[in-house]
Image (cartoon, rainbow, N blue to C red; front, side, top):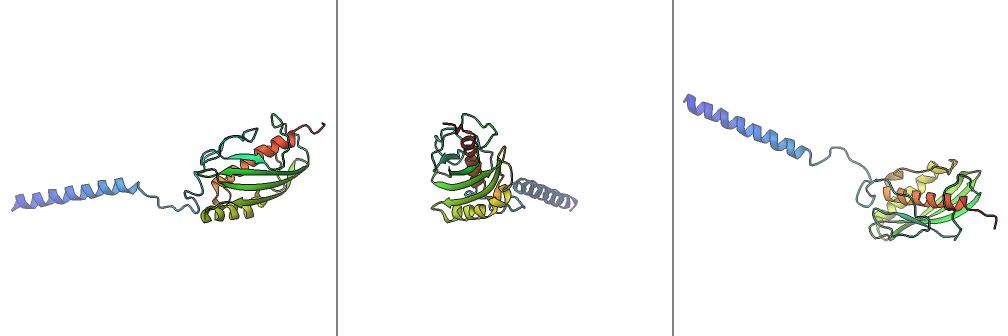
Length: 181
């Protein structure tokens, strides 16, 4: 009788140890903390690289880019000396580069005096991220110096934020260009 009782304890202990081990392994499979609007359409939140000076390059999930809509010349580098004016840019991004935002930026005294963003996407989820971004970004950038201005995941829209940062990079190059000719 003592032997069957000790076998039962050993079996129960082994079962409990197995359950604890399985629970520990599975515990890392999910997160208990929700991240609103942090889905495949919002992007990875990874830092973006600098904007191509010519506006060339292929936009894609990990490679947002910006192009000028007004055809202004660009300086070879950001001088930090910016011409007042309005700059019209488009940031492109997304899985196939089809998503884009039009950014209209007014500069006065080196500061962003007005910004307006209009998103373009075939995906309702992406459009929702763009709309929330467009509503929130003026409060983040207006009144701030253009020099070194960069936004982080505004309104949960990391890819839109990355494309906006590319537009800011290009705006700095356009605003730095020599206007004497």
